[in-house]
Amino acid sequence: MSTIKTLTLLIILILSSLSLSAQEFSKAASVEPLLIQKGSEKHWCPVCGMNLKMFYKTNHTSKLHNGTKRQYCSMRCLVVDMQEYGIDTNDIQVVDASTQKMIDAKKAYYVLGSKIDGTMSKVSKLAFALKSDAEAFVVKNSGEIVDFETALNAAKESLVSDTAMITKNKEKKIYPMGKNIFEKMCDQTIEPKDYIEINELKSAIENKKLCKALKEKELQALALYLWEVKRFENSDSSVGAIKVTKDEKCPICGMFVYKYPRWAAQIFYGDKHYSFDGVKDLMKYYFDHKENITKIAVSDYYTQKAIDATTAFYVVGSDIYGPMGNELIPFKNESDAKTFYIDHKGTQIVSFKDITQKEVYKLDE
Image 1 (cartoon, helix red, strand yellow):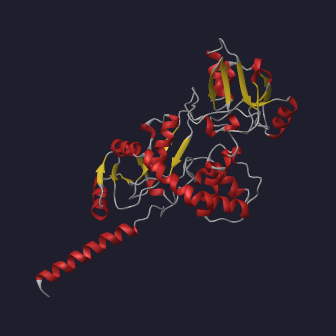
Image 2 (cartoon, rainbow, N blue to C red; image 1 turned 30 degrees about the vertical axis):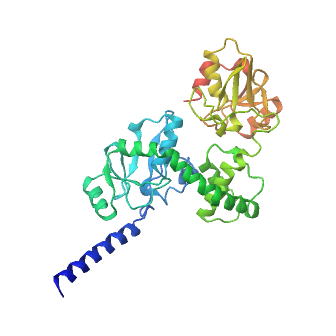
Image 3 (cartoon, one colour; image 1 turned 45 degrees about the vertical axis):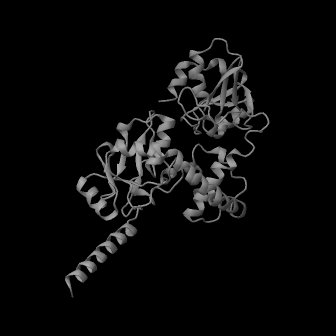
């Protein structure tokens, strides 16, 4: 065989090997994954609902200011949470795509833009503890080796376009699929507003057997439909409900209030108002801004209607949590508060005038 033919064959074999390597790489865990969240919902991303084990090699973790641990399928979902919670970047960890162990994200070597498909993003971002592992990955799958900050900024810059891409796919394929599954295979009384996050909803569907047996792809489509479509059906026209626009953030925690309609609360100062994602944060604001208040509205837990906060009854210490953890749960009628108190192991029922600043902040402990 001539030298030219030998070199040509060698090049073809190398290229074929590289292509095969890119195809063979899987983001799914090949070891027992480390899942740091609590409860049965720990198996799914709290932002998008994706199965963490299936996308383990792009997993990131963080810790909220109240100590709650969070685990994401991707850097994209981490960025979404950072915008809402103001996460400290010093607490972020990432899965080493080589060893599948958790490592400090700030010390990791990220490969940006390889041939591997991105997770919830057009551009892939895979992390490695060793630079040599990152370099070997680049040889096989291309991409650029960057530090954490560079990868994070890339995720932030592409968030709008990535979200648009994801939304287009959901509207075209996922939502219709989820709606069909819900109508044909599920208990029609499922109420997505009863859950704080999508991973809790998925856990309830699976563990309470609210639907016929579903594959992960079907469960994800169903959860997305329920969480992002059905949860907001008629929300703008619900008679008596607190109205919140999509750009309103809680002035205490910074979370978008519209995502948590069951917990919405508002303080009015004439024509101006502030919206909160729960009574606890409303009260924190109230104690420091009592002057010139014209109205305070909270959502009755059972009816979801707006009620006068000053005449409501609040259950403290129950086993039901709001978006920010332990909550003061409001009811228009004392009888409803007593029923909830018994059913959900509350510690006390208080009126508005009896709520103290000390007790409110104690709920964060």
